Length: 417
Image 1: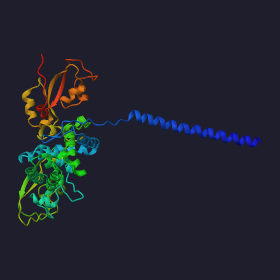
Image 2 (image 1 turned 180 degrees about the vertical axis):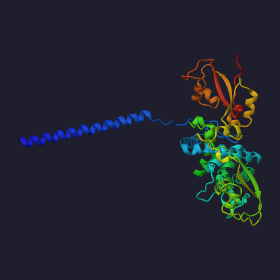
Image 3 (image 1 turned 90 degrees about the horizontal axis):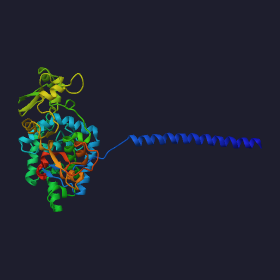
Image 4 (image 1 turned 135 degrees about the vertical axis):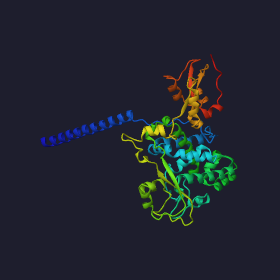
């Protein structure tokens, strides 16, 4: 009997100890989960409603358009590694691309098409589209790019951008609309024309398209928004950490180069440097049987020392000598030196120039209404005016920053004394 009592007691004590142990483990997990929930935060992005591509407004009042853009803006905001490199590379390559777009009378926003196509890199897609602008061989040749075993000008950012401009001109002549022109770069001119005719509409935003093209313009708009307003989306990338334009000089040749290694050494550079600056050279020789004229780039003296001893790119070079350095948005204030600011603003697109205005709160007017009126957000107005609460008294003067390209569509208050 005592033996039986001992066994029962032993089992009971064992179960009690096991229960206490399991409870301790669960309690530790509960504490961990509680700490995780308290400390970890992921914020949904605030979606702007003043979107446009090349001045053509996106109808964000349409819930489907709004939600489709919300998706792409969220993806690009939280795809931090790719977005960081987009911003860094933009400082190097956008000055080249912008100048070519302007010379060909193509709107500046098309540089973002290049960014979403390749991330400003000479990549190759699964369908063998190549380079910054992702030309397939047939289309590249059609628009004047030389492509063979030893030369592939799809890898030349200057010549491929010129070719892209030719395409955009053809597409715009067809559609008389820049948004449809950009969409056709993904879907093809025939594809967009067929969709418009079949569905009986005349603009991109009313089209029902395949998933890739439906996302395409939204990705362009999202990249544009994040690139032009990086701090709004949490990106703090100072000027000296962005890649500056490479200081180069060029020579034109129309003959053959039998050995590119020897050619590089003769120019006092390495073969690696020659191929890095001229990725369109696909072999270690250039026979050039047709004696075509090519432009070859070489680094200027000291270009190999762009990176400073401390960290990142040399800040002095980046700000003082690189004329095409990426710039932050400019704010035009009433008490600022107008001539200096206007001169600086003239080098930037209107979407990167902000005008500071005053708004006096009317009776029964709240911050949501004010934010909607000026195409901004309540949190921004609160930050600009150091507000702790969203309720504001009548006649309170608020400072509002309005993008220059949006001013025309805003009815401003009459000036009050």
